[in-house]
Amino acid sequence: MDINIKANKDKCIELLRSTGREGIEYLIIELEKMGFFTAPASAVHHLNCEGGLAQHSLNTYYAALGVWENMKIYCPHIAKEVEPDNIIMAALLHDICKCDVYKRKRESSTRPYNYSKEESRYSAKYDEFPIGHGEKSVILALCSGVVLCDSEMVAIRWHMGPWSVNMENNDEKLSFKAAQDKYALVTILQVADTLAARIMER
Ligand SMILES: [Fe+2]
Ligand SMILES: [Fe+2]
Figure (cartoon, rainbow, N blue to C red):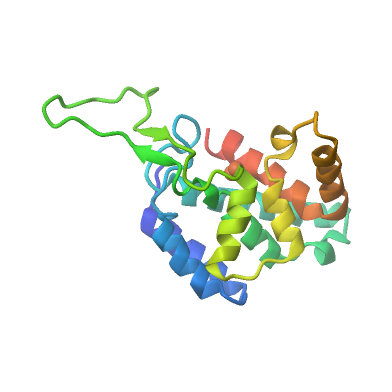
C-alpha cells in the first residue's frame, strides 16, 4: 500500500476539525508531538512502515463509515445512536497508544543492512506509560484536552474486542458485555478495525 503521509495528515486534521469538538486544536497539536502522522501501525504486522498508523486509522474510519451507512438500511435507529463525529473520533484515536511503541532499529553505517520483506525495521517497546492498549489511547486523548463522549471512550477502550478481555476476570468480562450492549459504536469500531487490518491492509 502506497502511503502519502502529507495527504493522510491533512485528511485526519480535516476530519478532526469537522467535528468542531471542544479542545480539538489541542488534540491536533498533541498528535503532531506524539508522532502520530509518521509512526508505523505495527512492528511486524499490518502497515509496519512510516505513516502506517495514520493510514490504518483512516482505513478504520472508512471501514466504520461503510459499516454504519449499511447498518442504517437495516437498523435505522443506528443513525441516531451513532453520529458521524463519533465515528471520526473513535476511529482516528483508537490506536494513538501506538505512537511511542515502535522504535526504528539502528542501521549500521559500516554494514549496510537490507531488511528482508519479513524482517521489520521496528522493534516494539511497551515501557512508555504501560497502562493497556485501549486504555492508553483514551487517556492520551483526554490528556490533550479534547472532550470525548462516553460512547467514544468506551469504544476506544474495547476496540480489540474479546482479544483484550481476560475471560478469567468476571468484572472485565461483564464490563465488555455491557459496553457492547450499551453502545453500538463499540461493535462498529471493533469490526472496522478488523476490516482495515485484515482486508484493506493485507
Ligand atoms: Fe488497536
Ligand atoms: Fe487498530
